[in-house]
Image 1 (cartoon, rainbow, N blue to C red):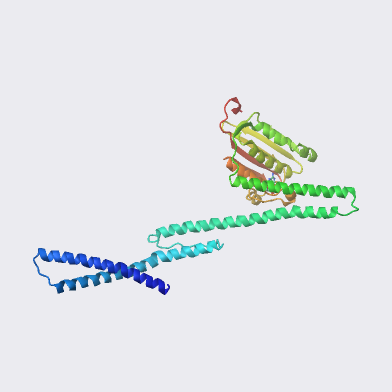
Image 2: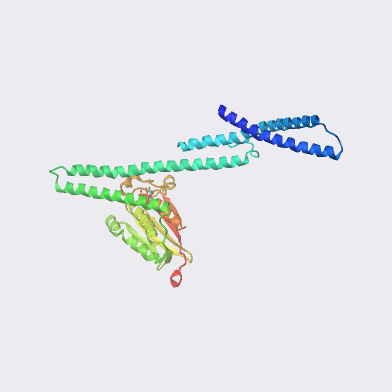
Amino acid sequence: MSCKKILFGISSWMIFFITAAFAVSCCTMLFVTTLSETLDITLTKENISVAAKLTFVNVLLISLIFTVIDAIRRRLMVERPSKRIIEAGEKITSGDFSVHIEPFSDNHAYESFNSIIHCFNKMAEELGSLETLRTDFIANVSHELKTPLSVIQNYGTMLHSPDLPDEKRIEYAKGITENSRRLASLITNILKLNKLENQQIFPVSERFDLSEQLCQSLLQFEEKWEQEGIEIETDIADEIYINSDAELLGLVRNNLLSNAFKFTEIGTVSVFLIADEDYATVKISDTGCGISAETGTHIFEKFYQGDTSHAMQGNGLGLALVKRVIDIMQGEITVESEVGKGSTFTVKLKRGEVVGMEKAD
Ligand code: ADP
């Protein structure tokens, strides 16, 4: 503590307690004078002066003792825990989120401080995991951007070659188109996910025929299943109307169907739709490579790609988007899978307030 601070403390202590001692002495003298008059005791000027001085010194002494006790109490009970919290706060502001304040063992005496410490530790933990997410996200985005960019760069350089055969030129141009498409899809997905996470997209509830939309989504992959000889199996109940956001649900259907076709080399992709009064359940199955238990725990994470052999065709954001949409719609998504046998993604959606005959199966 600086000398200036100590002097300031003493002077404010003196001003306050000398005034208090003076006031108490005056009151005591008034009391003594009244008492002596009532009891008919004669007090000399000297008696009164001694009593006044004694009272004044007593008050000063007692207040000094209490001040010292209070200063010690404050130092132990207030300043010590405050210092711990302030030091941790300073570490956090300088970017160190690993701080953890040890709570006080005497919970009774430090109950309020322990509550603050508990909230503080929780906040530091949350900030730490947000920071990890942020740095991981930047690393993932940079990696995903760099790969197609360097492919585009290489093809572009090769296209400069003057005596390039026509077929090579077409191949390189195709490579550039394909990778630009990949970049565009990555950026679109990042923006969509960002909007969904920041709740800038509000689901618009409209009544639509889920059965019809599911068939239309499936037909978009017709070229693919014909080219690759993939079998299609469907059991889609007719006219299942739901009240939901058709565009957002389109994102779910397309991602799940695109994955089913992407991860199935030879085999069958099946689409089922059943419904009861309250829920519509869509199942998209494939007999593709399947998902291991370890991969299964990460598939809904951003940028996670379990099967890297198909990395060129995706960016690991599809299922993260699907999960976010399903959460916003308060639906459910589950996965059953076996390596080498295939996977089934089941999406259960609330049908909402759908009036009329169509709601029945
Ligand atoms: P990607 O763009 O890589 O397809 P997704 O988020 O859609 O990203 O999927 C994440 C990972 O989940 C994939 O890399 C893959 O390992 C796994 N996966 C998703 N769907 C299937 C499926 N139908 N069959 C096998 N693996 C799948």
